[in-house]
Image (cartoon, rainbow, N blue to C red; front, side):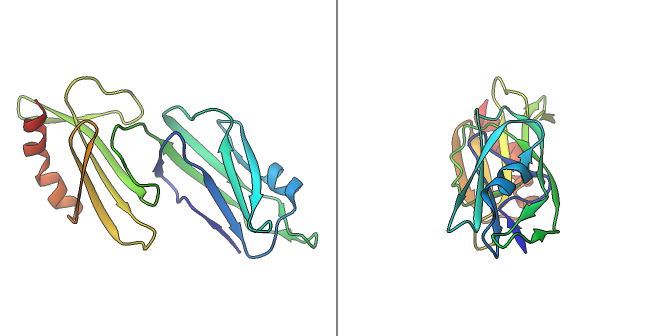
Length: 176
């Protein structure tokens, strides 16, 4: 059985490391060939006696859409692991300080113009005043909301996504 540290459509940061964990040790050559990101080159190295494969990009990932492929893995006894994964994800850049243990599941970058909320493309650099809203979960899989009051300052709150959106107008006015 394989476990990944990312889930489909998750938001990652440019320096994120993708982990694939196996119940049995993996053959290094099969891990290097079978774990890849289609839109970027990277390196796979094994840890924890071959049970964990770590994919790191050769260069810092640019904001955009990517797809992780996990296929054709072989355990240390030469047995093929039939399980395959295709996981789309998005890389974003933010000035917020988000702990590495937080898995970002939803992300919104927006600005308020004339009392109208305008969404900004999360893969493009934002200019001028804006707010960012995150929904994520920590390693214990409990939901945590992060709202950004001003670019670069995170405010961790235990809010539901709806409550976080209600606070957006106030936060955006403060940024102006």
